[in-house]
Image (cartoon, rainbow, N blue to C red; front, side, top):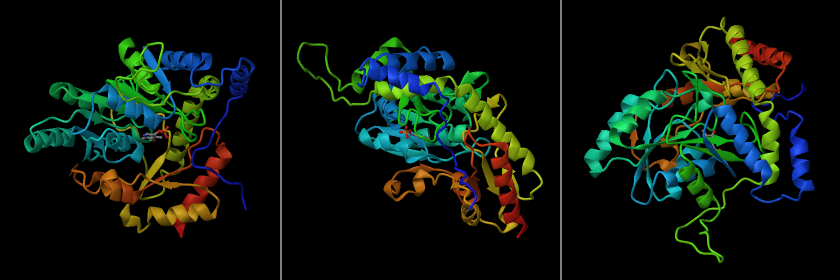
Length: 377
Ligand SMILES: *Cc1c(COP(=O)(O)O)cnc(C)c1O
């Protein structure tokens, strides 16, 4: 059996261990400390952001973004349907109602037209506008975020931008995560960089960053005894994990470059297979990190993504189906949905290819060859 090729795998740079050892040497083995501060500074400098708060997960970042936006019980929150459940679940944590919106075909992300339709219709039905909007830069692809933030501003709705997969992606020279009131990052094991598990919330002001830290440390008031006015969470990143993050920042730019290289390789190598299309930047000024390279298979080929996935698996190559939309999940069956079939078709037709930053060109060639064989049979 040939060695396994993973979809997206941990890729250490080398300096991570020193930061972690420093945490041990200085006995900063707690959910704050010098590595956390340094990791936040490095993220701020990379992103061009003024305030980044390191957290225990990307999901925690989305949750605290919603808390910061004032989302509570009885509110409605519009969320992209075509995403991972972690984008939507924090809406439920807050006792709010998710309203799902379809994607548009250019970027596969939230359709600005359907967003307007959803906002207007919710106002008609409930007499209120939604409290927040969660667009996602899925697979690293920048969403039509300029249109979305303009719509949000028009209605006075906060944008909590899910950039968990889009660290390093840019639209018109501006990094994803900087467009909304809050931007959310993830450092889970298979993301662009990892802290084993972790996330961050990008805030616009020092006050919002301070409030985020306050909520992330059990909402403990500044008194000599434990005193709480509001419900808090235990969401800060450990100083040990932040050390991994500090080291990963040394190689972040390389990782992004390498993933873009994977994408360019697939684009070139697969262009002669009829009915197979590698996803490309979906709007002018878009520069995706191509966290995952994805393909769509034309139904005219008579081939199904699931059959291809199994074919690749038989050759020890891991691929993955596209996200199954949230409005198609049993747990969200009751949530209102505004769509016209785009993300359902993507789910039926698409597949994610191995995209890790540690893949060699030989690995990529093996993926291409195996995939090409599938379409020949
Ligand atoms: C990974 C991911 C998250 C959640 O991040 P965690 O760090 O795993 O909690 C949220 N949204 C999207 C789109 C993701 O891919």
